[in-house]
Length: 588
Image 1 (tube, rainbow, N blue to C red):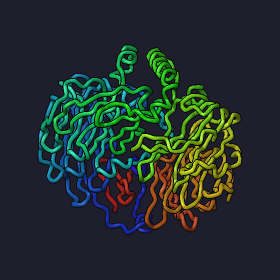
Image 2: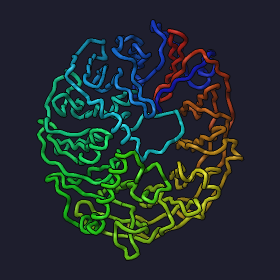
Image 3: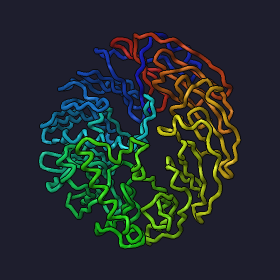
Image 4: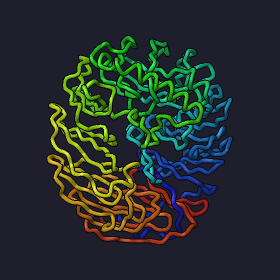
């Protein structure tokens, strides 16, 4: 998980000594009181900062790497507030480079330092990131994302794997990191630019690039970049005149190879690159031949031809309504009759075959109507191999789907907001089972009610309880009400090696994968959590710190917190930082 900040004033040595093998803490005098304490994904570096300055500390060698001041106030994007100026940083662990960024609407200054000794590497004021794009791109990335109602954010897998980090959401969306090239791609003053992280060299500039980058995919096999663009701003003119497109570029020269328009609203994380096929599911499924940029002329295109005229018209209406401040087709409105336009997740097997849950009409025509079903598509041959189009009827709204060990699971909400889970054999399309309608599922059904599949179990979270089901048969193993857990309405669940953590309105519960509640603790405002290799769970609430033994179900410690100091975990939970005034104590 990511770092988190908590105020407290008590000694941590006692519980650290019992929670893990802790050394004597290292005390660092920052010379300023930090507002934020961040750690790199590999735990090697700590960054302390307030709105005016920063300090980078090497945790491994216990040495200060560098410190400096920001030009503007720290720029951490808050909700939907547009902040036209700000300062922040990028930490690139693999390249051992730290970059500060001072940005405003018409100018961006970047300074790079080596993380080995803090030596300045390069500086540039020629890299206009296009801060005016920020609202649009941040909004695009927020679309379709479920509000987990938790402040305990974790690193995503890409950042952990590539060991880079920024806390500033402007920077995170406006700069695209390409670790294979040791470079970042951004909108420069003269167009799209690829900049070497290590020396600041502008490798190329593509002046014909228009619009903002919603997502950038790198194809190592062909050495190409695929930029999925979004309109330049949220303004009415851009929404109506800017056509979203996918642009293919030579990653070494920046040469624009081709571009192809797509229909629908961009949502990150849905585009997939399989071999020489780029799959886009933003409104209806689209398969693009990456060699030519043309849509593949096969089963998918042919079967969707009847629906294309309707959905393209809907796409234009959605843009018009959005430009005028409406919410037509919004993924935030689960009662909207247009919620069928929410893209479905893409699931692939090892051979690159796509398992895609979509809609059909009464005659089995794909892309129209209210019936839902499963398709198996051979991406390499552009051929639909199997289809099962009557899995769910008009009264069901799909909420989540998942494929595990050759079984496709789909959760849906009915007219009375009762939910079910259906399981389908992904190879044959045969229906394996359908669960009974979940009890008390209405309250949370419109917001966040995930199920988890692990160890041949389905753990299905509803508003007032948790079902544990047999993943092979759908038979109920257990049902536990949140009343019996003492956690209130469940808002968020987290799978860990020992079971499931359930975060509710009144507390946090620990459940194993057989449905047995091991432990629970009252905690109304959890700010952060971590699990240890010793089977403990640490919870940081706004007014207390809690240690739970997840194996024995015991509460090992509860400490009341006072509003005096700051507290932070590293991503792994192995390093703990306590800040009192200008001093930070590191425990590990």
